[in-house]
Length: 443
RNA sequence: GUCCGAAUAGUGUAGAGGCCUAUCAUGAAGCCCUGUCGAGGCUUCGACCCGGGUUCGAAUCCCGGUUCGGGCGCCA
Image 1 (cartoon, rainbow, N blue to C red):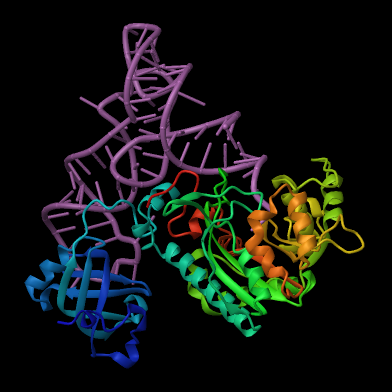
Image 2: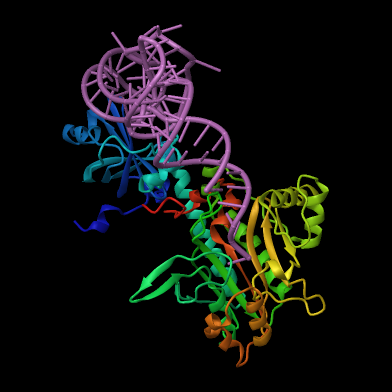
């Protein structure tokens, strides 16, 4: 028997009206065996759903019935039988089996419950992620994540963006700020890249005009929160002849489109998660950094002065303030002090202490940051120096600015944060298959 | 890094110095049952994180460790 003959249909693709008395094979995990004595039900689960196999004692070969009764939950089986429309069965059909093939027997006890009857801690679930993925809710999260990335690719492609891949192994010590993971590259020191920033800018000099990249980023910070990862997925764009307002418009429209697509294509998954999505209204509210400081100070819980970065508490204060005023969770904070933004953010010509930069926020956390970039090599070099970095380390990057670099802008948005805020997931590890955090390196 | 909290069958839990030979659910094994769909009923199995201390007596109190959770910090 060919392996592909073990499964002719997903359980959800069986239409009882059209397929009555047809022979099918379903394959998957034994979700449950319910033996009532004279009748025995075996529920087979696959990625798309569940199907019921029914064995009536009087009508079934005793050997087959014994085989069904002895199945261990979560084992892999293929069941071949005929479709019988049955109003009493889930999905309106049941399979009357001719043959049950046990392909892989599960050990017992299972490391966790997969039916939703008993909770498991996130730590337990991550230790047995392969089994956790068999839970309907977990499958739903990762199906939606796929839909999010599909929508991002579709949206950006339709806006003329080209998908690129840039190196994750780099020689440059740092752009400043975050620490990097050092690695050995043959006999030299190298690092895992913290972001595609420098490379995507170089592609603007290369004339690709509009690029995006979806890929891993690595940060060696010892942060220990529900919204940080040491390996995350970044969705980055860079676009020529665009200022910060142009790329903000792309960002807010993309986020709205992603929500629309998830609503349109993932209703079953959203229902499984108990999430009711609404599309964020565009354009998103824009407040300046200065206004943000004023808002925070007006609540009296913190006293920030101009030039301070926003604390976690102040992000929540502003997020709730905006939500109470607009009913919207997404907003921009624009015009940040040049000093607290990275060297490549372009200062305003008339107010160099302010930069053409922005953060895109969700009520609960920062999702994205971006800016129009400096495209003048001399200005860029002096900004690198004034942030205490050595321009020699950036020579590979600066060269691209000396031979025709168009003005450009871009942003990066954290894929995991986009998904978790969309679904109301409280811990970022829930939306990563195998998260890498301060302590977890396996599985 | 720091502050707070937690750790009990495979999983999730109850437990406030003797009522613990440790509760309940789920699970597993067995029996009964012809329409279940978190099936139901009966029986059985399975656990106090590690090390020290206090006490006549510790799952329970104290100290140290480990691990986990949460807050903050750190984080273009």
